[in-house]
Length: 207
Image (tube, rainbow, N blue to C red; front, side, top):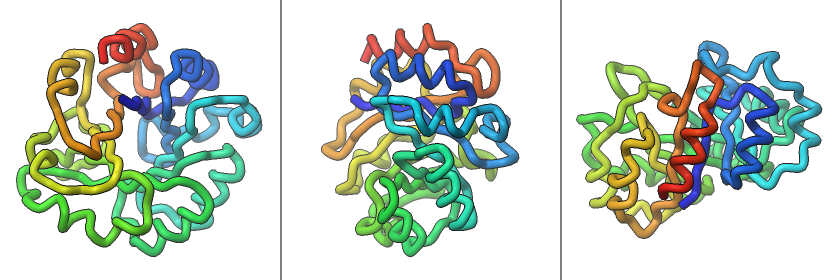
């Protein structure tokens, strides 16, 4: 089970996650997010750090040049696209890094395979998150995972949206041949952008 811890704003916490053998760490480049990396992380230090984990840049409807600049400045290994980015943009970025395309799920979503079809050939992973009250990303809420169980998907995917240590049994019970990992964020924080590493460690050990 792969774990992605999103919303990191401190170099020390990146180092701690690497020490815990967490596989992915998300850096948010969305300016209106309370977890926006902004000037909180030293670009050179992040780029030059010798991490085993993959550094994931999280974007929402970005300009291509801004993503390319962040890949270069922070040494990103993966880009996560959280908006209405086109398959063409995913394909172009996949020449540079691995790409995670996010799909936001709510009670009106009925056909996962139709939702992802245009992106099948142009990204490396999917991430399924919750859309709640018109908001996407960081909602702290869960969608009904059963909708994924009924879908083929046929690409490694992350579960996201309001996951906490209380969901261990539910995570273990969930089955799908392409189920790759979980994405955790707000339910593991002391404050926005500052993770409770004790909770992260407990979560990892319990899976």
